[in-house]
Image (cartoon, rainbow, N blue to C red; front, side):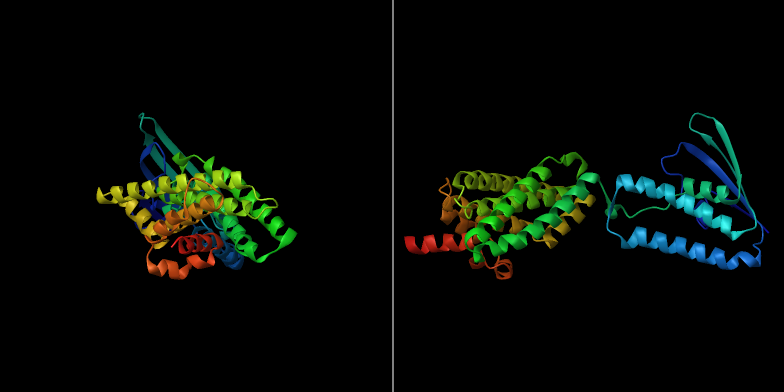
Length: 330
């Protein structure tokens, strides 16, 4: 049985895609496949099924991968295809001819697994772009997971007493500073808009939590609390400007920014940042810094009720202190 397909034909796997980042042009592909012996159907079916399951898991189930790992995956895919064809039995004959941009004509012929390997290599599977992450973006995500774990200890600090409270506060303080510094060292050039916002939101969260922990140390480190809370406030306003930049890109018709803005709005990043600013103001005022508790209350008033119902300000010890200061002043 003989089949022939051209590379521009969209109907078959042998020519489903144009070569990625290749200088070849006008490629023609001819493949000849002989019948498969029945005695190898079962191992062939098992191996091919395993290949399909592997690709489904890697491409659609696992978390986003970075660009470096994607290069490795695109080499594993043709290798698996080649090994699968080996178990299929029979013979596969492949002939490919084409030319380069410099006018050089090239030809390739292969049999068996090598034929399938070259087809898979020159026509790799595409990967959903939203699931491809740079190394820096993956580091942002990993740091965010650690900060969320740190938040559990942060929330329990006020309920502890004595040395237990001081130990928990020291852990939050050190972890917050380390994670904030790690995030700030990441270059924004290899981080998309959506992950840049996350990078700064995580950093702000780590800084204000570390500042609040300074107040619970034995003895309290008021100077460091002021420094960290000031850094958190400055970064928060920088991040708000970045969100405005994304909104401007959307208004100018930037299609890629539309998805970024949708995610920012879905995650309530704007109100989350303002909530963090309010806490940082309260910590700064509580430490004797240049900010006052009324600034924290003023920022809280800019946050809609549904968000404050989800995260009641009175449950935060520093915001609770700010409310008490305003009440006493009146």
